Image 1 (cartoon, helix red, strand yellow):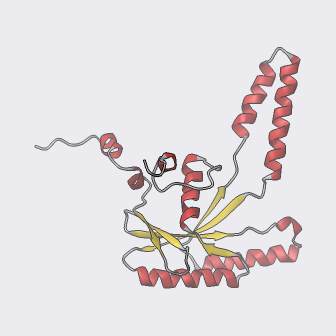
Image 2 (tube, rainbow, N blue to C red; image 1 turned 90 degrees about the vertical axis):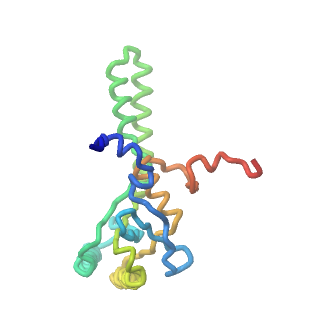
Image 3 (cartoon, rainbow, N blue to C red; image 1 turned 120 degrees about the horizontal axis):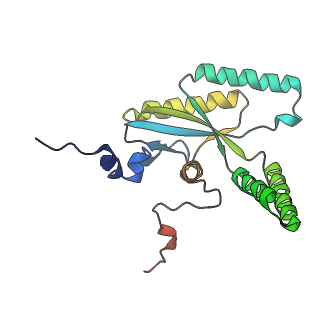
Length: 204
């Protein structure tokens, strides 16, 4: 009788790509840099990048119009998923640490320095408050590539007709989204194809 493998051992044997459900990047041939992700589950995942509007400068009528336009998009793309990804660092854990340190510090100078550091972090977060990215995620059967490509073009056209600025994510944007979501890396300007590739010198 064959021995049943431990589920934890089986999961540990999977590659990172398999765990993340990323089989390969697929060019969509819609424009020069539009890509999708083909998953191990046989699905094609397309990320549509939305440029957010600063509603603080819009009037009430304009905001209501934006909401109605978004409702139209949702009604016409019922299977879509929406993502909101922060592209800046969160300082909440740092601030929590400095608050605790300020409370426990016996030296008033250290307390003042901690409070100043918290104030500085608040200023940074305020200056970067608009640095969130909004994404519409669509997925299709990978085997029906041409039908999917046609549907993607229609989806982009629909969103633009509703007065939203949108484009299909390119390969570098997809890698950056994954690095932010899974690793919290907001600093790397270029994500390598292979782990550690950036440290290999040419000719070695």
